Amino acid sequence: MAFSEISFGARLENARRLLEQLKTFNSYSPLGEKTSVVFFQKLIAETTDSYNDAIDKIENYSNGVEQRQQLYTKSPDALTKLLSPIVSTVRSMYGKQAKQSETIINLAVKIRGGKAIKPAKNADADTISQSQRSYGNMAQGLKDILTILSKYKYDPANPKITTKALQNLHKALLNANQTVSTSYAAQKQARNKRQQQYETLNDTAQRIKEAIKSQYGPGSAEYKLVKGLKI
Image (cartoon, rainbow, N blue to C red; front, side, top):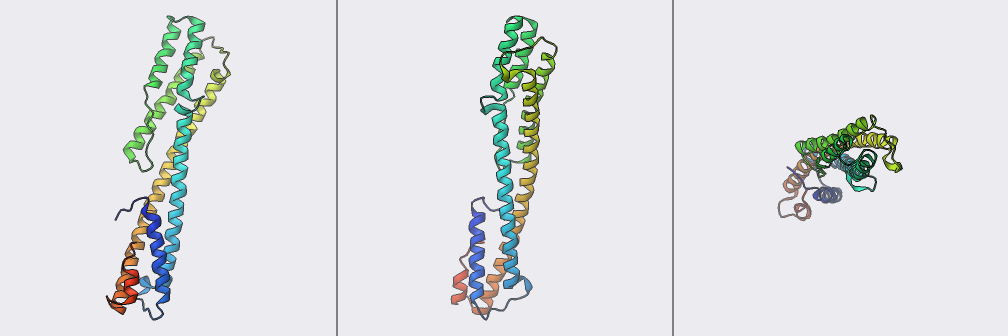
């Protein structure tokens, strides 16, 4: 059974409500350990931990994706926004028609054509892999530019596009890629664990409802208090 992102919290709250109602049924007799108050209370605590861990991991991944986009395309000092001043510097040094200018322009066009893909929080593995490749290709494009510039007498007046500044940017790009890759794996694992935990919680809740229905009857006040709780 799959649950929507929004429903996780609501279902967990319903499980807590079921537990509180169960505690008021003084004569409740569980049909085995897995329908007991103690077991259900422990399961709710474990599910809560899984829920909170998944939320944290998803947030870390989302932050990593946003920070990477800032470095590549969004911020004033992003890679794609530094390409024009780099090209202008080389053109100024060697001339617009020079081979050196043509080489840097071609590399800049390659980076701009990389089309960085921002994956959704719940993107599948293929989308994530495609996104990683697109960002990886753009980072490689900057590395290629640095390799070429090292052969030129490249000495820009703009401190944001010096060789050292671009080397630092390249390192930051690679780190950002790694952060997204690692945080994606972590949030994927946390999502899976949460899903499994909720399925166990749901199954246990249904068994408890059946136990209440069996003990008190389908028309009883006890059963009516819990039968509508969706978990």
